[in-house]
Length: 426
Image 1 (cartoon, rainbow, N blue to C red):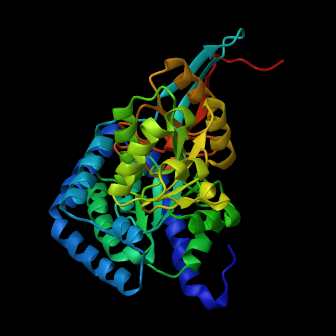
Image 2: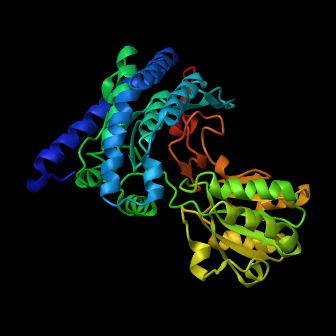
Image 3: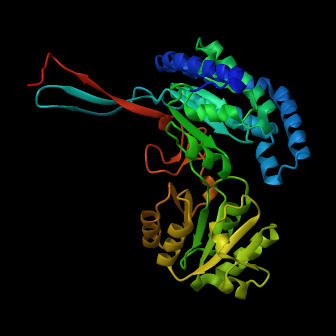
């Protein structure tokens, strides 16, 4: 990395962070399962013990965010309370209880010449995680990288710098208690955006993987500028399709939950597709439920014919991740048209079908090329915790390495371990 005079101090600081992470990664690669479990359990206890300190820090972040005019959905992402801190601590404990992903034998075979070859899971090394608003990502990312034997460099948003710093302090207590290097989880305390650029350059080759977790602006910048591999999703444009064989009670419950449980999460439904055959019988009560819950409906002509309060949807609405109480609704003629719409406008994140027709459900799940597909369940289950992973760093929507929730197992790569008895190649 080139050090420019204007940023000498910051560049030197970031290079030191990278070098320390690389050194810590070597120690983490050799850490025992017991050490990692002890570190995580201690960190969870430290998060609970520091609850008041974390909440005080979060209140200061919230006040600053509101003063700066941060949109309400983003303030919700930033906000912590007793329940969210307890969920954070429990998530760390669940990660601690997971099987150690390092050292797993993924495959093994013997060649005719007697060579014994095994494919074995191993840590990636140093993972740089760049995120916005949600301070709980500090605990999730720290726990998952620790469990998977990696070192982490965390760079949260300036809006959550106080909250994330308080959580990071609890995570380092766990490392210290287990005899692991505290530099295995480092938090970049500067709000200078140049630090992000330096991480994207790789810190002199010390970062092996970058994971962005945030809005389209952040993720787009990371994917465009990174000189190291990136594991990311650009946006969560999720769909719920009410098939002609949908159960009405399930359709109402799933559509309402998928959109309105938390509108600011990437698994929130942004588009509702309703089969023309059930537009009146199912669509009308579902839309009424959403409107009663405070959701703005933007529909096509067919939707507006049964639900006149809906605004007319534009082409842009089918491509929009609202992260707010707004949903685009389209009437479709059958399963194939629903799948075609999702393939045209979706982001390969999470899509659901509501139906009692098993064949239609299987067709949907086989044909829709998304990281997560669901049958008769809310898209809000697109979450590592709900998958039993304890936590996640994000939802991978690419085709390489990890897809769906990125947990501890997905933060490993593999190497080949070859055992011989003196073989040489002719």
